[in-house]
Length: 183
Image (cartoon, rainbow, N blue to C red; front, top):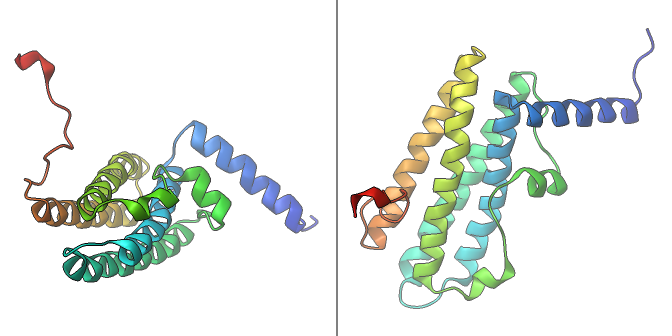
């Protein structure tokens, strides 16, 4: 049997990715998570560069720490996906296509409080994908992937609490939908 060309292999990858994203698999959902981590790293770099005001002196080290963490986690997750026989997203176009986090050049003009709040919401958005991927990994009997995702969920929860406390909030303030039936 003849070996596939690079173009044929890439075409197969694209077809499989389309199938996996229409009937979500743990690998496809984790590709979204990896893309979110990469886009988040860009946003954290932007935050570290542009945060202004007296908060700058405490926030630049925090955003720098979170940036390094995001880069480390995305590297680990990419390797784990490869270990699991998956093809992780690896181009800027992939990251933009699969991420649910939104970048904007306007963010550099946000107040320090708005930057922190946006970062909290980004972690919370990531958790939606992590929760779904954990369920899929467990269903597909992929314990190494599930374990990493559970660890990532815990890291995100800690980051949310830490940033929320900076804002003077409880961990879940403004994140959980309010029940309108209580009126």
